[in-house]
Length: 341
Image 1 (cartoon, helix red, strand yellow):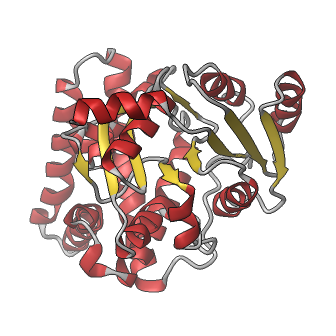
Image 2 (cartoon, helix red, strand yellow):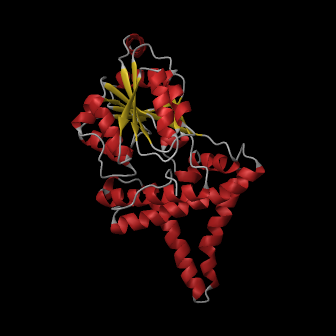
Image 3 (cartoon, one colour):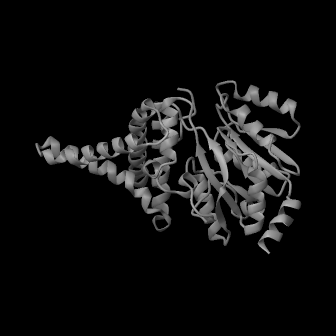
């Protein structure tokens, strides 16, 4: 019966609208757009680019791409906020199925076809797959490795894989437009963690959020130390804010980085009072991430050294941000990691 349903879904796949928030993505935009337009999808694809106030050549590239392909529509997003751009794109989308792709991401060849098929077969409101992090420089490769490791940013299925099934959240997301309209779209007051918040609201209205390891999207993480710090600090702040709003719905893994930060700070206080035992938290943590780097498969020696820095940056920036967000909230905190200083 499931096989018959799958054949039927493939034969009658509906048209889709792909929405993409764009800001300062001159290095990735063209590849991302081409990865969408070259999909082996049997019916219409509409691609809406929500263009923020970029300071590089991003918007010029977008205009050039739109001139070459009538499937591309350009939408002004003067505030440059991801959630605002996504909601504006959803409002003008002409199709009943919405796919979010970010401008630094590239979906696998059959992503749209497989994603919509799974959405229909599971009667889900949202479907997501694996964030397949990749890197070019030694540092970016180290960051990408951290994304896919349980010792990096936790064991969420969309990072490390797992069995298909109902999920806590979804990476990017393939949606029924009706589900997005039912919950009022993305919360525009949230700068980071908007995908998690959206998934929770969909589930609270009786909707289904589904994870499938069949679906992969290549993701290019931050390739510079300063941008990684900014990204993970702001992400931690917003995760802390969202956690204090709904502690019961928060995963236990969210509390590990802030506990790490507090443990290291407590150790430093003990050291200030001459207690050598205070060195243990920092030393044990450093030993742990060095061991992870030594055992990291497929990385060069340079990337393994960079992995120690990347892991510490991600854990400590996120953990400190979480503490700040949990105590004071995230008001005024934005992600500047893709904005030129």
